[in-house]
Length: 368
Image (cartoon, rainbow, N blue to C red; front, side, top):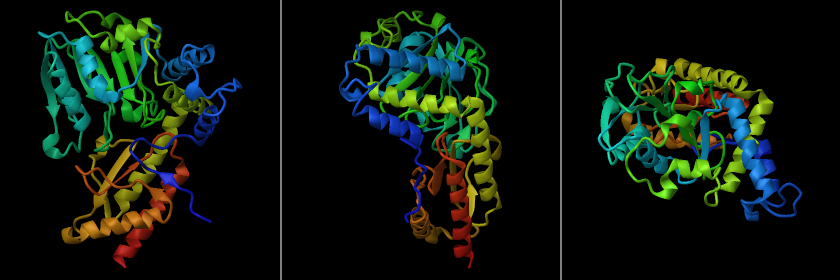
């Protein structure tokens, strides 16, 4: 019998089997209507109810206060990177950006098109292997932008910085609902859903109501968050199926025990894997220990054990060794190299244990 497959992809990534089955069934017949959710009007009552329920799940699971709006949009975070400064940063104003990885840099680049940007920190010279805590903040910034978890580099803000002025804005794409946060500490929270809470195709933006309408520029209709808030996410045809997959994933998370319960499991999974890496002679983690992510774990060969000229061939061998055991999508991002295990909410402890066992067995093979 073939090994069970565990998908360690950084995104799109592993989702709960329960959510996949329910979403699959809805593709044939949604809510006993005889119509597929893929071909049902977004103006219909079943879809309207589903959007409302999805928002209710999010509000309950994250503890989102009533003075925050929730916007579901397509376009990915690459679109939000420009929409956010367009809506919140005046041309003559300044925003602080903490550069802790590739995605933070992309967000910063877009912000420069709309106003002034102050780089609060930049750890590129250290391959973004740590989170800089001493930020160079502006006295009059409109907001401070951070990337809560850096998918590529495996670092995560363990506690969130406070802006000197303005509000805190966070991209939470890769640790969405993986740990408890206080929404009221943020003015804007946003993220792509495909790393932890849905399939690709939808983003979530959570916005404090008093923050919109402050910029002087004319904002194109589709790029104005207020457009979508006023239309209750139905200004144009929304990414219905991706929102439904989110709905089912949030339902699964609620039944699991909510964010508190999944955070406990996530920390146990991460501790198991980091413990194995710290004890290994062949493998070593790349992120600073105090900043390690509980979602994304990059690791490489120990240079003292594996010679540089042997590393590429041995890496291919390890990936094949892991794949034969059903452990897939472990190749690291090109900017870090080596390997990366993304252990999102839906990754069971059994998958992490299987990876730990694989690391141990491969190490014995290398050291034999």
